[in-house]
Length: 320
Image 1 (cartoon, helix red, strand yellow):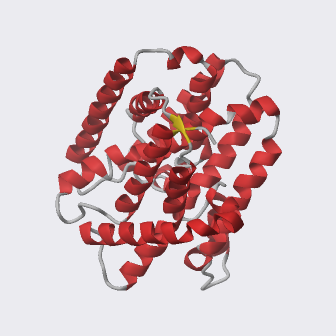
Image 2 (cartoon, rainbow, N blue to C red):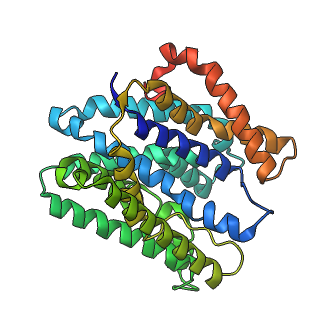
C-alpha cells in the first residue's frame, strides 16, 4: 500500500508525545519546561490527528461510504472502551449523578478515548454539511473552535466566577468534544485536501508558517503560565489554528511514498495501549515524572511490537 511515509512518521512521533505527556514528563523537574511542552507544544497531537483523519475523509464523502467508515471506527471505539472498562465502570452508589457520569463517559469516551468519540461526531457533522461551500465550512470550523477556546479560557480565568457557567467551563468535556475541538480540525484537514491551492506552495513557506505557529504557541502558553498560579491546564490554544495546519502541510509536502503501514500501526497501537502501562507503574508507586514516562514508553513499545502479529485478528482495534 502506497502511503505518505512522512505523515506516518509524524503520527508515530505524536503517539510518543502522548505517552510521555500522560506520564507527566518534566513534572517535578522543570515547572516552566512542563508548561511549555506538556501544556503547550504537545497540544498539537489531537489537532493533527484530527486533520489527518479529515484529510483522508474526502474519499468517504466522494464514495458516500459513511456507514462503512462509521462501522469501522465505532467498532474500534467499543473495543477499547471494553478494554478500559475496569477504569471507568464504577458504580459505588446507584444515584442519578453517578448514572449521568457513566453515560457521559460511555458517550464521550474514557480518558484518551475521547478522541474516537470526537472523531465520530466530527465525521457525521462534516458529512451532513458536505454540500456547503468551502468558505462556509471554514467559517463554521473557526467559529466553533474560537467558542471552545473562549469556554476554556473563561473557566481558567474565572470570567463567570460564582456562577454555574464557571463550574461548567471547568469541566473539560464542555469544550473538549466533537463540536468545539474535533470538528474544527477535522474540517480543516478536509478543506486542505479539497483545496489544492494550499498544497502547492513552496515547502519553505510551510516551514516558516510552522515556526511562526510554534513561537505563537509557546508565547500563548507562557503568558498563561505567568498570569495564573500553579500549572494551568490548557487543551486548546488559538495559536493551534496556525501551527497545526502549517506543520501538517510541511510534513505532507515531503511526498515520500511507500509502504509505511507498520508505522501507522505502531502509532495507533501506542496511542491506545499506553494508559494500561501508566496505570501499572502508578500502582507500583511510580509518580508522574521522567522515570514514569520512560518506563511507560518502553513498556508500551514492547507490547506494541509483541502484539503486531495479532493485527490479522484484531485489525479493527488498530484501524487495520
